[in-house]
Image 1: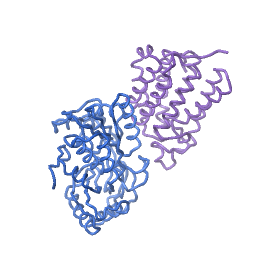
Image 2: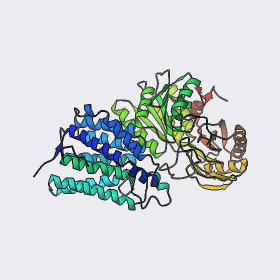
Image 3: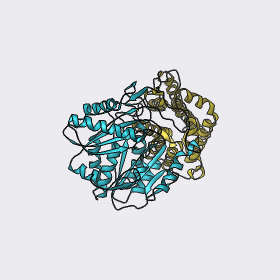
Image 4: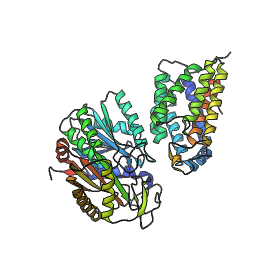
Length: 219
Length: 331
């Protein structure tokens, strides 16, 4: 039974994969956002991850705690707006959760994601079901925790994260927005995927893939 | 859209570069969009901020007796935590910093985050949230009431208390007391146009006004045919008195233009408000009439009332010297 772990330099490779996936999906995400939001989500997130990766060489030498903190500060200023402060809060909480971690194993990843989920819900004063980035993160994290509790293999736990995240993302299409721009619309965005949930799903999907491949997934 | 500007995405930084020329008391910190006092005094620092487009709020209130730093976001968008942190550091003289925040979800998130970061660095901080708008219980931009022009009173009271040399706890208590004793309500006669958008944010017919509209053009209570100054004053005073009983109390009165309202109309509204307050038994102590917290080029006005006590009277009358508000002593 293979156990998966990730080093800080593997995490940097993961961040590069995220940045690539965001770049490749410019038209799709922008089109989703045009239906329900300001239309600036893709550009904000893209510039945030570009800012994070300006430090990629020094980040490879950092501990996970330092690396997550660096990501948090750069996403906060680089993404800006509500998404920026939510991603910033998530990564700063991740830095605290990872204080003792030299490498990231599957159980550690579960702790980090739970800390991120709590931080985003607290900062945004929001819950699962509000049609936001929280939905894929919540369902992915819950599915992962359940698989861990059942003693599943690492590969199965990561698959649970991936599937849960996808289901959470897909479920946003049927939800009414409670927060953010879409909630001012007459239909509350029903019928449209939430673009913030889609980009969160990209990150969780790649996280599972990169854990399996030691940080070098290229989806 | 007709505006005196260059590139729409440069309006905030270019405005602040201009502001630094108008007011030699302040310096502009580029990249962070912070306006701070050049001369850092040995006292509690006062920081306010929020989206731009509400000028002279908030950068116009930086100066002796009011704010030590103002943090400016993009038009109608909260500043990010790193900008707010820069403002906190510019205002911190080692005696702690009070943050004055209007109750909008984006501002609350970003200021709370900045407060946590600054606390990690050892700065003592307090935050006061202003929610003075009685128009709607919740809005598209806030959970709970919105913060609007009454915030200017909170800046003044907190700034004067800090100038007296009070501790952070004392300054925060004075600010909180003022925030609890202030109520506001506004009417819009026209929409406003964001520089980056170019068209009005919503439609109001030539003969319509919207009661209780927010300072970002977010919906209020109702659209009605335009009314006379007297009727508008009745709506504003009436709604505020339903919510907070100022009768028999000495009260500071702020009549605020939303950006495109001629001073003549603000003075007429002041006259009508004064007549109504007299009928209701409210005792006006001081009027502030002008453009204090605007919504770009929106026409319309808001009314704010602040209940006074001996401390608040002293703090309101204390001298202040800022671009947007200068008080030399008792009227």
